[in-house]
Length: 85
Image (cartoon, rainbow, N blue to C red; front, side, top):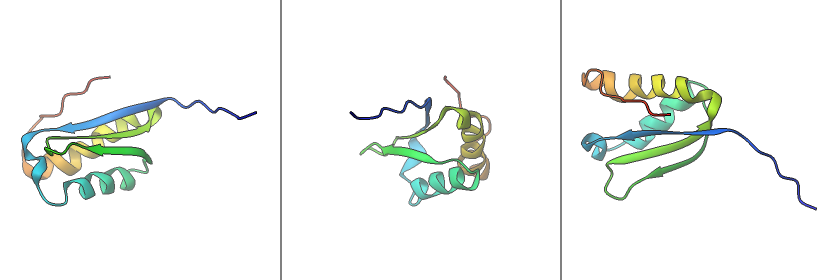
């Protein structure tokens, strides 16, 4: 008989027209890794206007902060991340 393990997960997303920048997916992964957050799965749409990362639910708030620091603050977009949970 197979064992089943359940984990609470969260999806953290970056959505916007500026996601067609070379290396943005790498910057996203690096920001989460530097914050000590493991990515269980990642998706980037073919139109490159959104990307989602599946992470542990406990890391959600830290992930939002890490992505804001890596993707928003360097570009001086202001407070443009909206959080939905």
